[in-house]
Length: 282
Image 1: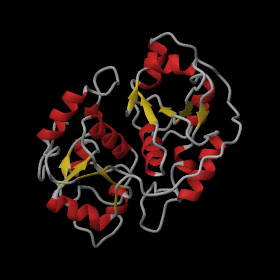
Image 2: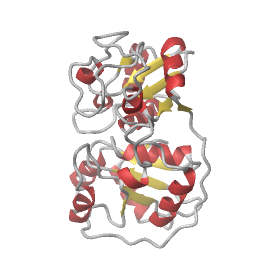
Image 3: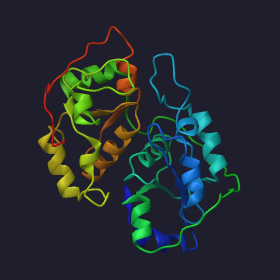
Image 4: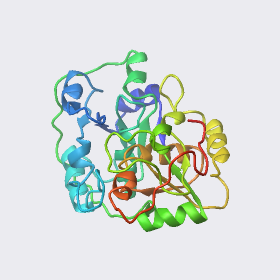
């Protein structure tokens, strides 16, 4: 199961075996995630810093948010209080678009029971459930992580996926087309990639579309058949949300973790602009 709704999560938190809650408040250009967390979060939730705990330091051609080593992720997860076999629920205040990075990383590292709060913090507030302020200091956990439980692409693999499978570009359509590029070295997209904006996974309330609607969306983009599927975005964050949405639709996909930030920083990598292979619904 990929998602959990606010009512079910509330019930689980009152049970004898509550899940660990991880608050992944992050947005590009907003350095105040911890402050937002302290101002109001789900009861008992632990703050997770995306830039330092869900990513290694940028540089070396690996992109703006390289994957952390499994050893570093294990130290962080133990610091959050994660114990072996305990369920995890991740959330943010942006439809799961940053929390999905924690969902993907923990699944990649062998944690089986990780879910995203559908509708994010807004759904919890809308349901009228309690909000805490301040900071939760967890008791350290003992989880042991191992890498490689979800498929991963490097730049060569992404190029190959665009040729032999379906490579989805999860950025905003104008960035895909190369009309704007606010952060990365060059504008455009990986040749052969299909535009599939992450925001189109959500409805007007910030909740994921139904499995049927998500599957129809991805089938229209060429996914859901026998061809393999890969996803990239700007730096490997919102692409994880796309992979979660694909999983809800019953489609497995691989992550190009370096994403456009890695691809565009390599002058030997070709770039396409315009509508390219397809533009999706975004």
